[in-house]
Length: 103
Image (cartoon, rainbow, N blue to C red):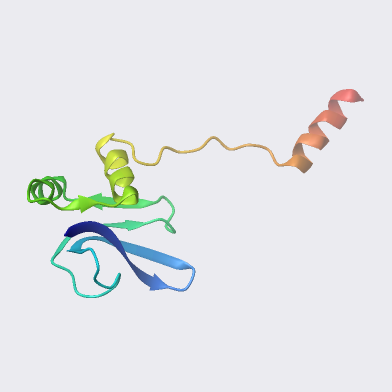
């Protein structure tokens, strides 16, 4: 059975993943049949590249995506995979703000 899954590359604490097609029971980082994209969660901003056309072709051939790959693909097709977060004040800064308002 073919799986569309993530293969981990990169240094310690600096992961970089390739989205690959591979046999379900083969090694995670071993040889693969096809490379569909990449995902770099440690970069700022996070990088996500997927060849949707090739991904859909492999789905038609019967390859099953893992839960993580399915979620990443859903994010990628939405248009904005990783929206920017609004910056929030730290607890210390909030406490200072409350203290200055009380005076």
